[in-house]
Image (cartoon, rainbow, N blue to C red; front, side, top):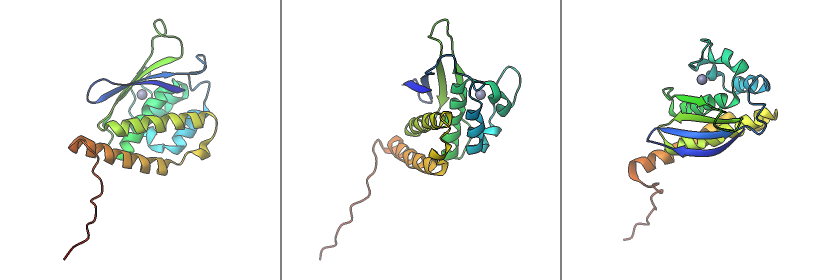
Length: 174
Ligand SMILES: [Zn+2]
């Protein structure tokens, strides 16, 4: 799975164009190890609300869902862990009568522009690592820690328009 386009529409929603390298392998049905490992790394995902036709819980839904839909929830989860809240929403759509098969449009809300960019990249890396069974490459706490730093830089930019440098210590002169 690869993010080929990131589009900032308005102030709180970003659109991603996501493509599957093999257009016939886009479902967790073809890769059941991905949700299994993902829930192991992020147990909080099982509390996610998910609107689906069958009224399934997110965990049930993940047995047979599009991998970009999992990716959408992961971006929301990463942002939620950093922000300490779970109010952001997302949506995954596709229309292969218009687009080539295997292309998805993922929409995700955000409050901090730098944080969502970081979360997109981390989530992409995690899905790719899990796909190739390399769960030991993922250190969730370290990733969250890095995203916290990115988020605080994002907050500074939002408030002041610039990243504040550490004050330069001055030597007192007599
Ligand atoms: Zn969902």
